[in-house]
Length: 424
Ligand SMILES: Cc1cc2nc3c(=O)[nH]c(=O)nc-3n(C[C@H](O)[C@H](O)[C@H](O)COP(=O)(O)OP(=O)(O)OC[C@H]3O[C@@H](n4cnc5c(N)ncnc54)[C@H](O)[C@@H]3O)c2cc1C
Image (cartoon, rainbow, N blue to C red; front, top):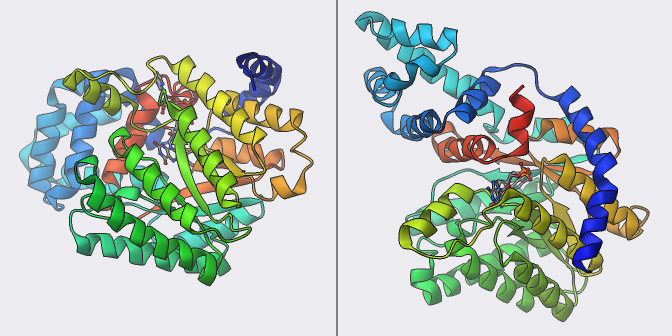
């Protein structure tokens, strides 16, 4: 693969990207409170950060209306002029003491019942319903468990139990389970590298063995912050190298294309797969923590690990996608993106490499999208009879708040494609 190949394929994929974008615009969700929120947050940086701070803190207020009202005022009062009329009226009404508590209750209800369900699945019954609903579209569901960074061994064990339970849902059509590396051990961080690596390896090894031997479930490690990247990849590579089971392609990991050195990760996984003699799954994403990575690096005077230009991230996504597709004997490829240009690039590359007619390849391929946010690309891909996999985060609102805030941030702050869909 040369850089020229990538550029040529990008050129070739343009007509498809344009028609996909048109279809996605037609299929875009109808006006909803969530879209209003995304628009509002996308228009104003300061308002967005206050809104996110409020959303983040809300679960800790324990439903106490007085506290909700006071916090909301603290975060939002100076921004009231930026809100659309119905919200502005609500803010005005909140100045009347008796009514203000009622308004705080309504606000909590709206966030819990209108915003959050757009992004979050509440329990396994809803997940099973989703799975049977989507199966008609050749669309699978991947179970993901929401939660904050684990702080104790007990919390970590709770996560592991949830993963184990989810592996058993294969007969309900849920074959894929997503695992957060930081949930494997409470001190999963570079400062405790040796201990964290040892402990996480033991846990992951056990989990991978049962995924394969007991359930035939597929398990993929999420990619989290850059600080955890090397530790995560070292643990993964060590465990899959020990598990040299012939034909076992049940284990996977995510690669973040916004990292300047992420091609190195892709090459490493191809190398490990070749050596172990069985394919690995790779979910290719752009990366969800862009703002945070830039901020952390700047605050510490470090060099920024992510590209600072959106086109560079997009190009790198394509570069890695092509490399992984060229190594499809070793890699089960799962591109995770909502961007029609990136989707079209992958399709065009698969076509050029003759993979679209390769049943062995297509049986182990799917575009991945996020529950709720990725509904228009999911429907567009279903219309083209392409396999999709919906990443479905499950949990209560308390567990889901930082996920919820991250999705808003990612889609409103930095030239994200999805925002262009709602900002019309
Ligand atoms: C199924 C699924 C699973 C996912 N799993 C993970 C995961 O494990 N780990 C993870 O980190 N993320 C994950 N994500 C999120 C993903 O990384 C992206 O944040 C999200 O999908 C938006 O990217 P896009 O290609 O859909 O949209 P686009 O709009 O094309 O891209 C937006 C992305 O571009 C990048 N970007 C934005 N501005 C700039 C800039 N100025 N310079 C350089 N780059 C920029 C950021 O990565 C941003 O998220 C997942 C996404 C999906 C759909």
